[in-house]
Structure formats: C-alpha cells, structure tokens
Image (cartoon, rainbow, N blue to C red; front, side, top):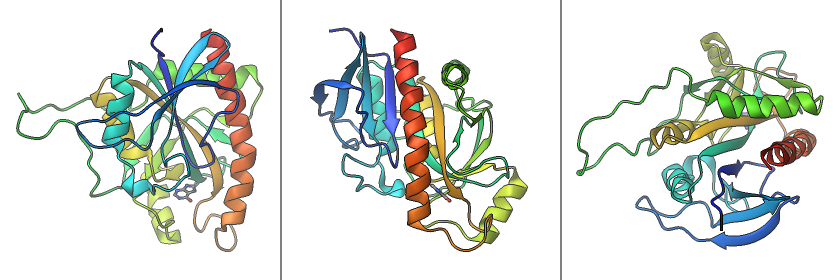
Length: 250
Ligand code: HPA
C-alpha cells in the first residue's frame, strides 16, 4: 500500500471526515505515550490520507491534556510529510468574523507546562534550536488558500494565532493584551503542536475556523450555543476545502 503523504488533524467540530472511505485504523505506541486515538486511514478518489482527531474520537481530551508529542511522532512515523491542522478559534481582530476560515501565518505561545519539545532527555547528542521565523509551511498554506479561492469561500489569508492554555476561555483583559501583542485569533491547541511539527520536519499549516468573537469583542458572554452554531457553519466549509485539497492531490 502507498504511504499517505497528507494528514489532517481534526479539531473541535471535526472528529470525522465523512467524505473519506475508511480503509484501516492503526493503533500507534510512541516513546512519548499514546496519541489521541488510532490513526484513521481513508481514501478519497485515489488518494489516501490519515486523519487524527486531536481531542479523541469522542472529543474527551481537553487542549492542555492532548499528547501533542505522541500525535506528531505517530504521524511522522506513519510516513506523512504534510499536515493540515484544523482548529477552532476565537476572532480578536474585527475582520476575523465568526463562521469564517483563517489561514494564520504567525503564532504567539501563551501556553505553559506542556511537553513542548522532542529535543530533551538523556540521549540528546547536542542542543538543537529550530528556526520558527515563519512557523507555518508556505506550500501547505498555498494549497489551502488555492482551494479556498477555487471554492470562492470568504477567508482570511493571514493572521497571528495566539495559543492560550485553556480549557477556560480568556478574560476580556487578556484578549485586550493579546490584541496589543498583535494577535488576530485565539485558540488553545496551536502550541506546542506547530513547533513539534517543525522539529520533526513536517510541512504543517493551520486551517482555523472562527467559532466566536473572543472575550470582550462582542456584547455579553460567550455561549456554547454560539460556538456550536458558528462551528457547524465553518466546519461545513472546511470539509469542502479539505475535499478539494485531496481531490487536487489525486
Ligand atoms: N478562545 C480560545 N480558544 C477558542 C476560542 C476562544 O475564544 N474559541 C474557540 N476556541
């Protein structure tokens, strides 16, 4: 069987990809523990891809407890080169409206206490510092942006993703601070996933779905109802984009 070159990491609202014909599931054990679930191999037309729901098949793993190292290691060792990471986010900047897709080009890490590197431990040959000037792979970003263009979907073609610790949402003051830092979007899973993918030399980009206005950016409080409604709308578009990307690959 050929090796799938593309993996999709599903986020909140994307625990399965219905357009895929599932060919097999593979349980992976890694030196870093268990991934969020078995890797799901699926076929669309002639292209096989790998799908991994970040929060588990039943959406039970909170963002700060995702085993990011195991997930990224498992994908690398399944032979994947390219990763599209789907993630639900809040919109901070006015143009980042709920229901829209955004393909971020920068990220700021506000997380703490997460296992955030493969380059540590006793068997290290030397200290390694990876370049993160441009944290997302431009080739994978272009593939996503071309699909978005072809489908005439309204999307933001850049943006700075602020990765927070969660699982709670932010305070309005925290979002004000993030806006001053230059963040356009806020989410809980972008780090350390992005950096770990770079450490293992995976071509990784994020397809963010804006689920709500970030705290204090709209009247009132953020409700799970609002998040659910916008995610449904956004994820329908993301599935179209992913299907188009996979069709283009074949
Ligand atoms: N903050 C952090 N993560 C999120 C949000 C948010 O407002 N919405 C969806 N994921």
